[in-house]
Length: 179
Length: 179
Image (cartoon, rainbow over all chains, first blue to last red; front, side):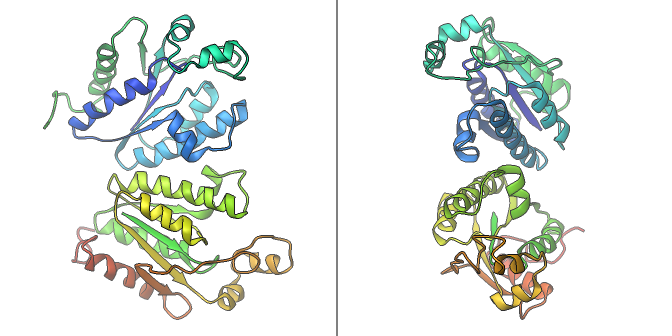
């Protein structure tokens, strides 16, 4: 299956993905995290942040996630993926379960966190086309899971996701299977 | 593991890859064929055929093959991959077995075949940077397997590869395991 995280920069997508990965491994799953930055480096060097380039980048992530997912690997993608249409396209092309997880967090909060100092640069106009500031973010219309990292601990958000996966029968109902 | 086919356009890489895939599945393996043309479409649209662009394309194939291979999927790559150095780089980064298969076929023979009509266009100068005509192909120095599609049937070439994999213990020694 694919766990498709989407949300603003700094909302906690990567942190949550990295937190979930070992939990899913403990449940007997093979897991790959396709992090936004890492994938840009390996698959999309040279692409910028125009809508067209972002869409190309997201399509590539979708293609690789699907290759993994249809072979039984849990592919966790953690890229902003701001556009609804291309997320829908990835879902349509998916040949295994596709779980969209909206990592919600108000702009004020991620901007206050500003973990990588990017929002400051975006506000100063040093970075152009920055999602949430000078580029749109389109909320998912019907994500399978919504977590709110401004109000939940990482454990709570992860548990919400795991509860959904258990309910759908995508992971075993028992807690740690073997480890 | 990764089965890395390399050879001239028209040498028979894709045909051999497609022929091998179901045989490996019959041996209980999960298999993905990363065909040169398909991967260009999905991961490298916009890249051309300069050395730099070719290397970037091959690095992407190597990255994806490795993601699959380290999760137990047999990743079969079937791109020309003409440059020795970047093939070596893919091998070095591989976190699972890496089997380089040189699909040998003299230029005269692939040019005579000219399945896609590309050699004619390359000779006429309509296609630039065409491997074997106006762009180099660097033979592998120590490939794990060499097949010669000008002298062998597809069955013979496939059997050579399977024999090597059996010998290395990478596939079961018995013929069709379950199917």
